Length: 531
Image (tube, rainbow, N blue to C red; front, side, top):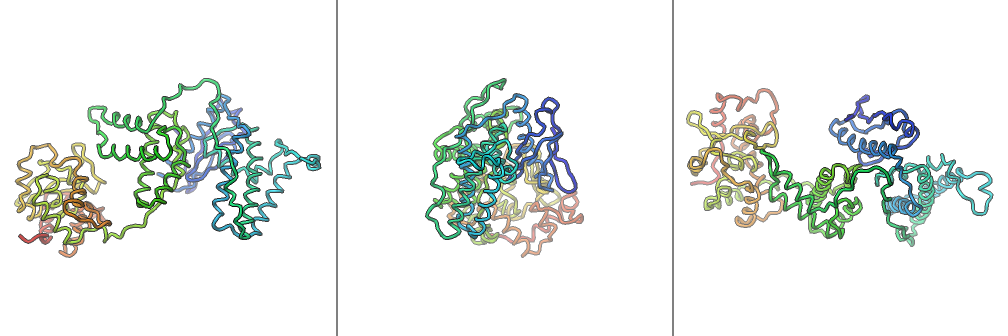
């Protein structure tokens, strides 16, 4: 498969036209999604368009979407299946552009003079497509064969709406659509002119337009139509797929439950569980409705939109390209952003930490009894220590340590997260080594759902209701604060918590010879509880 090409400091898509369609392709126009916009290029011997990014990872993501549109264009030319639009479909598409144009300027329409100028330019573009004889007629008809002015003035709007729906249309349809968009954009300018003068009597959004219905697939050699995909069937197939293979990693039950909840709520909103009919407008309406209700934070809403995008990606993979072949329709959505929570508000306060540790002493479940203590004396992430096994604990001299590793199919956040952590004397006094010594070698000490179990226990049983608090991750920030107060060496603190190194002199943990010194630094941390 082709890849992005670096030209200067910017990445480009540049692909040659296949020989099989070279004659048909020359002079045609193809609309490509590039990030959040669409760009239209005329096909010559190749298709070339800037991906408008200097970042290689972002360039790859944009290239995949744009290249899919190019491939679809080639396929349409191979099969002589350029889409023909009806008059009703042209009206529907023009209505979408008109509505967008009115909404954008509703709050701040600008000056009346601006819209007078816009209407004048619109009129000049429309009249430039008429022959002198046609202009003398009482009801002149625009000449669709001579339309360079319309293309120059309104072609970008045509490209935008075609890209939105993944349409590759014939030249006659483009001429009809240009005319309809020209008429509706002039009407939108008229309404914005009135608003600029303070007259909101006509909102411009009440004019009825038909809803765009995609054309039926053209006759010809095609792949068999895919079976109807529902959100529930897509999730079930993904759950099954992840159980296959000797070293398969199943989808966690809690994750499955999360995706099914999002799917049910979105299906209820749009009154359909069918995946292949999902539109960006439906998802956008659902997102706005959740914001208007105000029960969920913007961060939670953004996560639900991301979950929905993931579901559609699963469907695309399961359908082997038959569903949304030009890309995920939700890629155009901008998820809402929430105000960042100050780090100090997410951190456990010392009294909260002590309350958790005291409560842990009375628990029988291993994750509730020991994970809070392990995080308190390491600043480790909960999913890191929750993967520990009995044989991860080892002794060097008089000091005990445990390994946080990716061996045995375990996962860590990044390369800096693999480390050996000293066991603080308070953990030994609590009986941690007796607990690990009684466990079977090679088996997990804690259940897979430890993170959720611990979070719920802190909120419900311990009773810490502070909304901004991160019940599990809050230990990480508290440990770093306490290590600073205890004057622990910065390099030791970074290594113990799995932070990225700032220099080549941070040699902690690179050999067993350094481990005793690391244990000395750990012992600087004062006790959380007395006795």
